Image 1 (cartoon, helix red, strand yellow):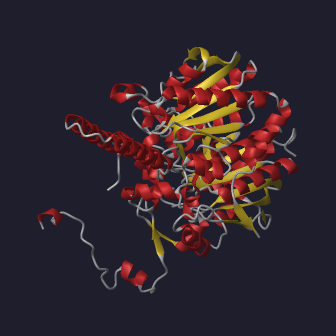
Image 2 (cartoon, one colour):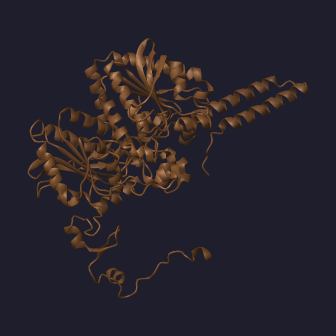
Image 3 (cartoon, helix red, strand yellow):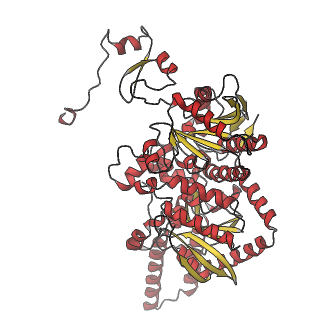
Length: 286
Length: 319
């Protein structure tokens, strides 16, 4: 009894309140910004590239929304979309997880790759979707990253990968860990050819993805507020049992410590990528 | 309840104690049971051998972390001649969880790198339980590039719970430091042989395992993340670590079956610490043989083979 005296009580929405009307479907749904609590309509949010107009909080984006944001209209041609994960280790529950993720997202895997133009410049673009099992990297994600790298090398055009991942896909055991080595090896070959690779780190980029292809770019951009790091903050908290600095492992923290080149907010992201592509014209990049 | 200690030896010792008591008793009673005792002794030995041949994945994890298990430095000192340790990353500091230097094996100079765990609490505090910081991986980067410059083969010994998860490690770029080692090793122009001697934990272990040949001691493990972490993340229940250990397929035999490890180096019954010299001698022979084989391959071909090997890891279906 006493223990709960100061606890939060769950309140029932009062008829007539916004929550009540929303839950009853009487008014259009509004998102409440998780950062500043401002209410934003879905339309407003969409028009503002899923960024809160008040506090610039960057909502998470699906892989297709990200492509829409960066690629020129109608220019994106997906490749290798038919690659699907298999449960090679007979890992308990993995099949169900995959089926659930596929039906939830309409994607075959956590990464979409393809060719497009950005401001008229051709490029290979890959985007990850954190709704798909936290966009963890298993055999398929690793393979698609490698094929995207190889495609860019074949065509001698720049490569842009937008990372968002919790790390290696544990359900594939060591096969998933080895994807770190595989993608890093493919990038080494890519770099030898003098081609441009831009990595965009979005929320979250941690674990095996952070410790492989996402960190091996010529230019590393990050979205404001994105969680970036090797170990997750929960693991670190458990290990050192100290209170962590407030901006710990945020994009701004990583910029301060010299781990990223630039923080770029969504409304100016496409323009930034375009400028970078333009500045790398000539030489080996088209 | 998750079993935390490898207690099989204790049971065996108790059994042996009782056995000796019985022998004493029979002697004092002057009752000759020599034949029966011999039979019983054989049986006990059989049980022990049998047990070690059929360890569960979790028991192998416990054995790979055994407090008496030889450390990387023990192996280096036994296997190599002229070991000269080198220190520091030339940027920030010297990581004691990651050791490296120059040595020779059967007269051939090599660069040797490995994770260093300690024995006992004091040593482990000194070596951070074998969990490197970014400066450890930058030391590796420096020494492997040096090996390439002087055309020295590289040998690595893997034994770590993982790269250290801490504030300083993140501030100094743990992820990038590991990624760069992975990339550099993938095309390093000298032969690379890696051995997992104990615990192969996650990306922090992988950074030393990109190689032309991957050997594993028979009781070593190699895992995407610790069984405890996987159980608590996937099943939200760290208490199911034993079950997770089997699901992850992390024993030396599993890793070989997956096509990731090339050879298993057998340990004596009871584990490497029961007969260190024999284990280290075995390992030396294997390292020597593999090195001879790799040195015979034309360099361009060697790099091609290494790339193909990495590039083809992974299974999926394609429609």
